[in-house]
Length: 147
Image 1: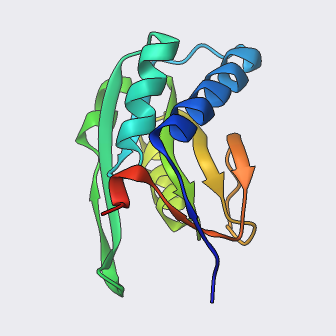
Image 2: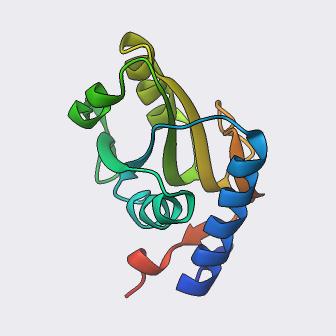
C-alpha cells in the first residue's frame, strides 16, 4: 500500500512561495501563469499574485475516473493570447507527465515557450519540471481533495 501524505493549505502556500523564489532566480521574463485545472488552480493563483503576472487556465483530462480516455480532452483557448511568449504552466503534481507532454506540444504549435512549475513530482514521471519543491513516491492528498 502506498503511503499517503496529507498536505495542509499552509504547506501549499509555503511551497508556492518556494516556487516563486525559484522562478525569480531564473530571470526569464514571463507573460503569464497558466493553471492546469483543476489541481493547478490554487497554486497558480497564488503564484500569479506573488509574481505579479496575469493568470489564465487550461484543462487537460486523460482519464474518466480511473479509466484512461482514448482521446484526451484538451481545452487550451486561454493559451492563444500568449502566442510567441514565455509562460509558466502550473500544476500541483507531475505523476506520469502525460498532461505536461500534451500541453508542451500545444504550446509549441502556438510558438509559446512554457516552463513547468509543480509542487511535487513523482520520480517515474517522463517529463521533469523546470521548477519543483519536492520529489516523492507518496500519494499526495491536497487540501482541495480532502473530505
